[in-house]
Amino acid sequence: MEISNLVVARYADGRVLKGVTQDFSPNRGIFHVYSPGDERNAVELRFKQLKALFFVRSLQGDGSRQDVRGFVAAPAETQQGKKIAVRFRDGEFICGYTLSWTPDREGFFLFPADAEGNNQRIFVITAATVEVKAGPAADVLAQRVLASQPQGRGPESRAEPRPGGIVTPLPDPAARRPSTFLPRPPRSATPERPTGSD
Image 1 (tube, rainbow, N blue to C red):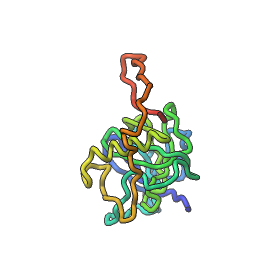
Image 2 (image 1 turned 90 degrees about the vertical axis):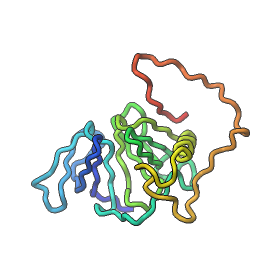
Image 3 (image 1 turned 135 degrees about the vertical axis):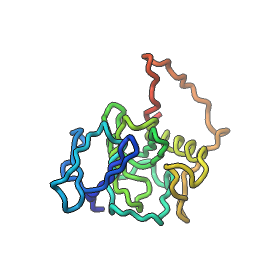
């Protein structure tokens, strides 16, 4: 798979900027995006302004394509890493795989579970998320979020699963052992954000 430098920058405030980047680095919180063929008018972007940066196959996309929601039946880990589910502050929900997620980083790359979509990879800004789960907990989060949303509603459900797309089923609650894990109280006055791979 060839990764392009075509990007769609989604700002935390809802604005969208489409173009090309040549200087993006996940280790540097500033980069530039310009319209193809117009490098002189590049726009400077900072991570703190963004929700996520989508590296795409095409800036036009395919409005008629229906993306797969959740996880397609697949192993827990692939060459793109382990499963991860991300719920953004604006309500969008994305499932995929990552090699680099830790809660203390400013952002991380996610390879979408729907490998046939327009998004090749997504750089998620951690501060723009409400909840991030990795490993088996990602499946549980995906099932919970998708079960609570009517199909075809909200930004995270722009499309229905394609024929043949199988979403990983949630285990039968009766077959699960009760958890002995007790949540710890918050360490500070600010509430904790749900994250982790529990």
